[in-house]
Length: 173
Image 1 (tube, helix red, strand yellow):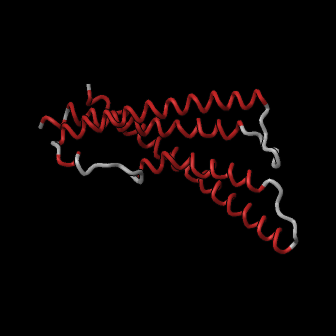
Image 2 (image 1 turned 90 degrees about the vertical axis):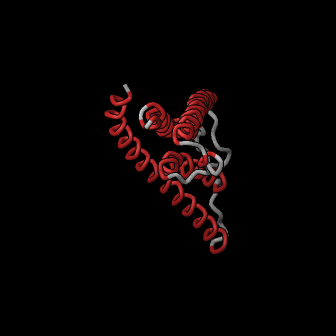
Image 3 (image 1 turned 180 degrees about the horizontal axis):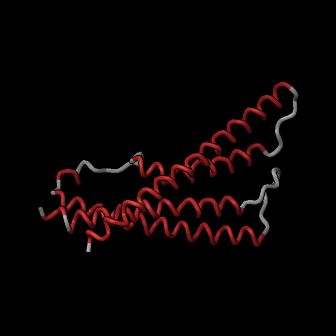
């Protein structure tokens, strides 16, 4: 059974990597937007005595655009903190079992974040919440967080399947 999993795991892995790579560029746009808003605000305030109205909100929203899309790609690159100094001493099969449990719990967490971000976005949309000075609606950013959780869930699903494959196939060798 686990050999069949490996056949469709590679295309799923490639899709997740390319999707996450695309979202990383969305995060780059968020960083550039933060830089541009801050630059325009400082230049406007210092040279023309006219700061950019609502810049604090624009930068806050830009932080969401910068951070949320980059989570999955950061996971793929292995840049998140993991405490492995004890687990590395265990046999390969036990390490894979612990990894599958950890990845499964992380998958559940991000499914819940996805769901609750979507529900929160709906409530913000129904309420018509907007920024007080920028007049930007809040709900697209909650939906963005929910959308960006999709590749994160895929990354954790792939990790669960790879770890279980290690437990059931290669760990017994």
